[in-house]
Image 1 (tube, helix red, strand yellow):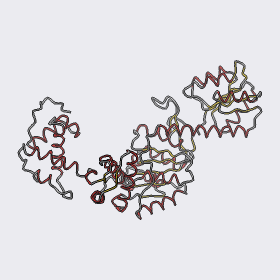
Image 2 (image 1 turned 120 degrees about the horizontal axis):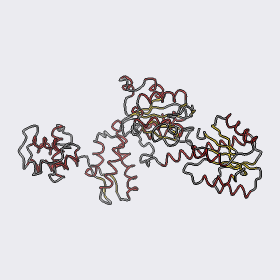
Image 3 (image 1 turned 180 degrees about the horizontal axis):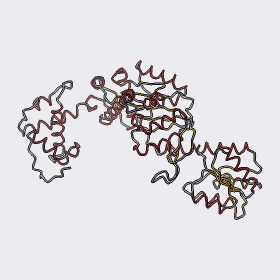
Image 4 (image 1 turned 135 degrees about the vertical axis):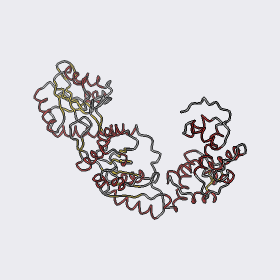
Length: 482
């Protein structure tokens, strides 16, 4: 309910009381006053959603209040009421910020129409305000792929989209779960209504309840104004609960109520608010295992898992790799304004041989980097993908260090590691050694800087270098131990 609190400013007691009764019957919080001064007192104490304002009042003109309200940071919608209507008066009021203009006497149906317009307008403004503060969508693309798995996924989306069923989209990170959710929304009867996303993993635990359900003014420190939650913003549309497995048990219980009863209460409030939303949830975890470990409520899982959709990882649809790569090349050539002829055979072979643990998101990032590194007018090569760049750079740094330091005597020699084939398994301790020596080389022997880039302490760096038999490089031992 975007409109909740209404002031009626009308000096005619019969009209004022009649309008109060109609609005109370519609379950609004209503205050009726007869003077500008009384209205100003209420406006100073709280924020209001809507005002019905008479033009001629005992202590001034309602139009004066209308102009004053435009300077407030949070201002109500104003409906002007007058028994002395004229075209000039109506134009002047609308120019000064009036939302609507009613001529006395007006009917109950006219009030209903005005309230419906105000509700829809307020909902639209709040949704737009929320969307304007969202990060730019970098993944707002269609689902791409020609494999049977993707064809089956698109068929399932079309079947599910036309229903009102709750959907649980599961898959590894980077597979495109949000794209699936948006595709369901776009093909649903709610496509012209709001689509509100909540990233459950990105919101601090102490704020997520307020983000979901909203809060009342003064509900907690910093709650200076009433705020609608994401479920209210999504009223009439669809809400995406991204990474639902990250929600705490306390909030899970309240989510269950919303899914069962389609109603909620704001934090610090006692008003029950009805919401009409379609819920789509995503997760990169196995929720059944989370239920077995008592990390996720079983009853909430059953409510979410009405229609499960599993998004396959890229390694299980390898026939899509080259098709996706070509699409991404075209996209990033346009984005960065460069010229790339195509993808070389060697590059294609490297793309097909990679395991893609980061799925489509990893492929997209790899292709974008390759397009940027590719010389103008040439084909993408395997070297532009950067798959072995880290290993080769490490090997060069390690060989330089090995020529100056005694061998540790443990594991394969550095020469053997540096010359390892791409499909050869290298022990983890050797990979760690390569990474440390490479970082030290890039930082020109500065252990403090190298440790900072690696995310380890200077003490760990010293111990590792001592273990490898590498000289300290002349740095002082007075470096920060952090």
